Image (cartoon, rainbow, N blue to C red):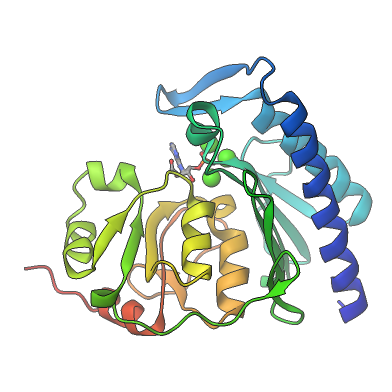
Length: 259
Ligand code: 2AM
Ligand code: CA
Ligand code: CA
Ligand code: CA
């Protein structure tokens, strides 16, 4: 895609997000319809579904030939990364959305021929959109972002997933011990934002493609390693234990020996 088309797509999607946020604000106190997916800790609301429906319809108009992979199933059964593939996580951090009304995100990404091309993560509560791509740079709203400082694991806070920690995953516990402290937000998107802003040294969690697709574009564009926890390449069409961190901390974590 030419730079002017990238910029046009970037601007268009940002405006969608601004509009959705405004609608959400107006209706936030209205009735939420909550249902269980795989259990009482895995919930979905009518807002998750509506946001995905709206975004899917808009993408169909903006980019008619694209395939869409969305968490709530309004897109396509995507089996190949050829051509244009969009990823949608309509509400990331649904539990936070339900219980706190903050620390949740809306995430979108566009991959072309398997290459991360454009991405958006909106911190809905703060109204900040982290967006861009390798060709146009990465921004927090209008502000251009730089690569975070390359600090060591020992010198930073590590973001992890609460579910994995409760399962007492050994490597996670060890990573936590080596760091300055563990942080759990309950939204993959919000944890990725901490890494993008250089407030956390890294983030590790098992996730689905819509959980990590946008962050992979943004963080790799900022020259941050983004791999599986073993340091191998991520498969965009299956779940992965994802590790992103400063280059220094990434090496430390990949080579961590369990004692
Ligand atoms: P979600 O809110 O979009 O489902 C903390 O729960 C983080 O892990 C959230 O970003 C959440 O995304 C994600 N997650 C991935 N799989 C999950 C699952 N099975 N149950 C709950 N959260 C999940
Ligand atoms: Ca979910
Ligand atoms: Ca998610
Ligand atoms: Ca979600």
